[in-house]
Image (tube, rainbow, N blue to C red; front, side, top):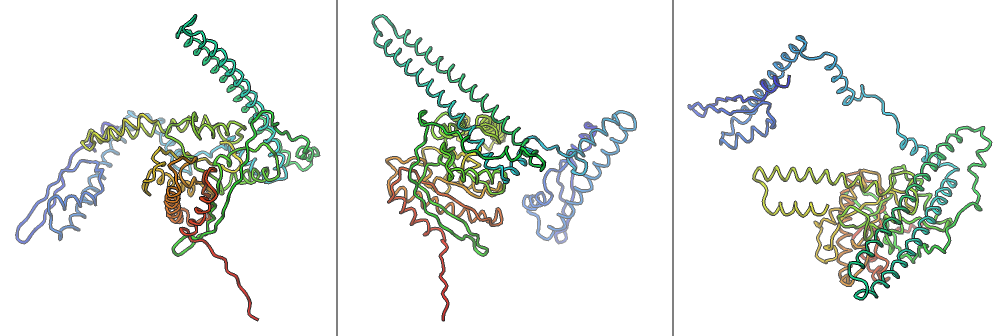
Length: 540
């Protein structure tokens, strides 16, 4: 049938149109390839422009062209249908196979005939967890998660101690070998020992990595099974052991010791809060915060189980499966890995506790790598097609080669971590509102609108650490640029989501001075429209 369809449809037909200009008769003949892929209105416009046709025939020509395309297309469809029916009657086509094909097409594209989707384990667990975290069992859930976290922290501490001892021992061995270099030992002996040391480190790291992976997998399975069982027990009001099951016993809280040296020091935060209204006619209220803090402080699971820390974790857990998610922006390079910089620090934080809801960070990065690889292949194919058609120049080839060269855990206060790729250009003072980093922020805010993220933390200066070239004028110019751009993006957001109130947190590095912080704090209300309070007094 495909051959017959090609015979009827893939053919050229001539469109003929006659018109008069004064006493002269003219005839327009245009070859058309069927099926016609181009829009009839576009084709009509091209004909008018290409042949310099008079304007008074414009409407008549458009009507005649559309009618010709419609009649010829319907004729092709009719002939194709006749051939298909003849093939079916003659037995050339299997009736049962055709019926199965039609049934599959209807089931896959028409909701009325589609099979109901069976809920997955992840969806069931999400619903159950959402119910429990909003029940009296919420504190028990947080305590259990904390105990699991301490257990993993102890394992990581043991790993670090063992790796440290191995490196110290290897350092002593290498020192002795270097002293004998040129006497009884050669460069080859030194290289051989270095290779042995590297292999020993790799073996030990792999051993601990597998042990941690196995421990987190066991914890995740135990936790999810316990959550499901507890939810089932809550549905049974006659269960007498239920109160004991969710009873909170402070003596059972496990705290990590300071001996492992993995206590994070909390530094003093500076913070200013503002309420603003944005919009031309329908104004939307937003909350803005300026903080001097480390971006990863929002991700770290605190080891001390104080009430304030528990409240932060409870708030994050309550909104996990909701329409009020929290996110932050990490500035990273364009290599999809977790080997260096803040990517490594973020991966370390993620690995410190078991992820009970989402795939591990390594698995998520693998998915991102596959998506990027597919997108790059698609982009390369499009560039190749453009090059073959004569629309590609040498400069784009160089860009393609360069681009080819560069190929969740419930965190305490966030649900989503955006990785914004930047380069050393952000350290210069000449970036503009069209810089890729700024446009990346716009894309992130757009994703926040489409995925119910109502709180987002942004590095105000587009850097996580200060350096010598970042002077006071540099900081003021950069902050002004980011403030103004984010304000414009937030005004755009009103058209994206209908005007939902959001919280935007601007973070500056901890090494910034208090004087600089308060200069930035004074700049913010000058750029945004800060709500002023009114004091009403009654007249006696």
